[in-house]
Amino acid sequence: MELILWRHAEAEDGAPDHSRELTAKGIKQAEKVAVFLRQHLPEEHRILVSPATRAQQTVAAYTRHFTLAPTIAPGASAQAVLQAARWPDAGGTVLVVGHQPTLGEVAAQLLGCNDYALSIKKGALWWFSRREREGSAQITLRLVITPDFL
Image 1 (cartoon, rainbow, N blue to C red):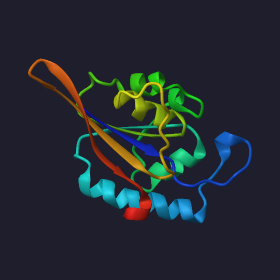
Image 2 (spheres, helix red, strand yellow; image 1 turned 45 degrees about the vertical axis):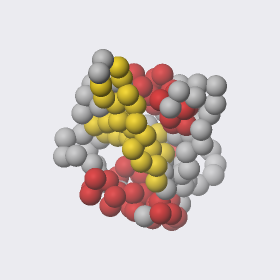
Image 3 (tube, rainbow, N blue to C red; image 1 turned 180 degrees about the horizontal axis):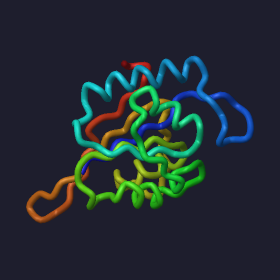
């Protein structure tokens, strides 16, 4: 199974939190990552997106075909994200568009760093792969990239 974590791009400050929109810089960040995803995502994949406006605007740079996942809204737990993605049993590729610190907690858990929180920069992708080899599960961090490098 492939699990890709995409933190929403840069958004305006303010309240209410769920209604915050992307800045001009955030729109450019999302577009850069969308070009990368079009080149690298397999044709068959699922996309789960937080209902927050900024997350929906981020994924809209890539596609309009996604599933809103209220369980991965701001403040969600890492476990809620993994359950929504059906990690590690769903197979295939799942792209999750969400928020910090939750996505950093998911990344830390997958890397075996449960006592730490990792910081995922705005607009960044973290791409994980899981496979069975000789009877044991292996998790590989395949890619970490920020919009600045695209």
